[in-house]
Length: 254
Image (cartoon, rainbow, N blue to C red):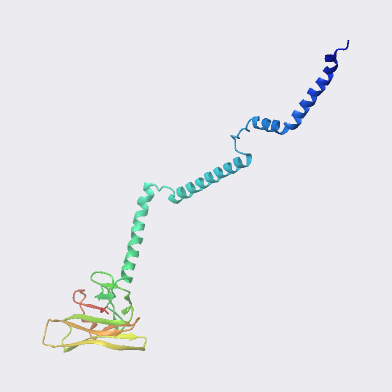
């Protein structure tokens, strides 16, 4: 007797294998998608790449170099400390040089004005009287310059020029005297001394002891670099007192 179940068994196994293959072929995409979804997410890199690390190190080195250079400049600008002994020795020189510089600035700045007084040494240099320009009441400001009996005008303008000379008697003078004091000006426009101011007085021989002060002043337009000089007819009778003998000029406000 033939067993039909045994005959159909191989056929059944073949059918099952075919169904499996079909399922695999039809559902392949779904299986792949399922597998791809199931795959674990890639881990994030916690360390920077090699290039980023190099850039970071380079920036840090540049910042450190800039700070070192800044500290070097700041500390170098302060200089080396000076000992107390050297400071004490340097102070007088600085004060002396600073004082002369300040005096020179004061002479060259401010309103042009000058006043010269009776000298302590020689009274004349040839025909012209000599003057004191720095000591006592004497001064030269605003660009006025005094040299060898000449007072040099700093700039063009209207100036007040003044002169006072005091004379006194001598024992060996027993004649009439004519006292004469004159201010001359030498300008570039005409290269010749021109009388600018003059004061005159006469002393009688009857006077045993006497003194006379001759004062004169006036307003004049003077050119820059003009030279003012003074002459006297009786130089040996001029007193050596700065309150009684003086000469000068000052620029009037424009």
